Image 1 (tube, rainbow, N blue to C red):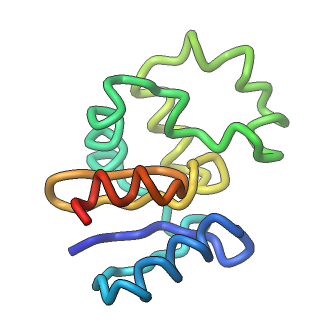
Image 2: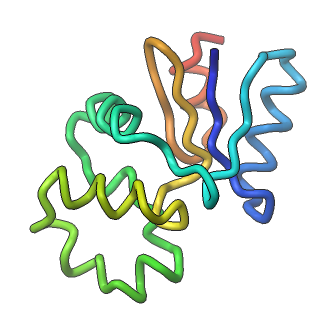
Length: 118
């Protein structure tokens, strides 16, 4: 089952959810702030982005800036990054969509089509 972590105030999330509904794609929608992705989901997503740790972070968010992660992200270990992302859903790039054989962060229709196989 496709799991989508989203935030109701996020325009990209609204577009992604609308896109899924228009295509009658079943999914589970989870509030990313209250229920951040689990460690195993973060690890899977990281593998889909070939270790690009910064791809998992919401780099335009206030929490990212407040923690000065721009200057720290390159020195974070995977464990440290997952600890931050798992405790603060605001730090996770959204929407964060994951399924048994793939995943995607952010919403670019062409990437979703390619990754979901539509």
